View (cartoon, rainbow, N blue to C red):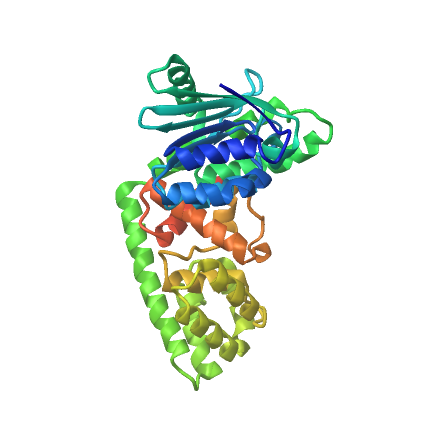
Length: 398
């Protein structure tokens, strides 16, 4: 048994936790608070641990919203390549109990180690604060290991924790922003917000069950057919270096609709403002060319440049950008407008900017990853079907 403090750089919680990562191949961490300072302190060792085949499970708490969403996102991204490693967020029920453990467990074959005390995964907890823990080497047959491992399994059970999907993290981020104000008065946010902390897909699944199977398939087939036609029209625009306004106007009308033509893209604002776009046919062509040429590039990078380009086209905005992006690559580019934003905020409880014009490349990258996750969870084929799904929910909400 060893007594650990942060009394010196030679022996502190950071060195003790790193030693465990260096000498064992399974690790379980349960901490009340997880911050970027703690993540950054361990990033190199965590990366090396995972690369050599190590498996880790980490659960963090949300009391007082002191766990940082940035740290959750960072760990989520780090673990994406390692599906046997998991990140969890403890469920919040302030009325019953507070999630407050600081437990670090390690195992390799029969050899085990239990470290438990007061140190969270923060720089202060690992190095700077006055923290103490006991470290016990044992075997997997010893009672201390069995009790500690069983306790960790209880903490990470579905009744007590949610695996940290993007939806879970973004919902927590909403709570985190709200709690910032309450933290100034050193009190937890009122229990009436507890419903916001029920991290699951229940609302989206409820809507999905109403999204009739045969009707859903027909809607998707129609949308798929429309977007194939839209891509053909965009190619006509892009491949004509001598494009004139007279040629451009009916092509744009086919995309967004007119008095005489049904739209391939369904957006009232695109239809209403289309005449402002007519004079900018050359700028529009350059926008289409850029997106088509970069359709396999990272979503955030393409969005950032395309948003800059569309700013020079009167009557056009982000809604044009993401329609074109999704038309050329519906696997990696998601439509972004009022409808999905409203659904994800109101029915998913996630923290998103209210207006698509406020999104930057990083925002859009995170947004597309979230929509991909929704597709995976619900069995939607791609961003086109997700867009149809969000539209169905939006009109139910309206």
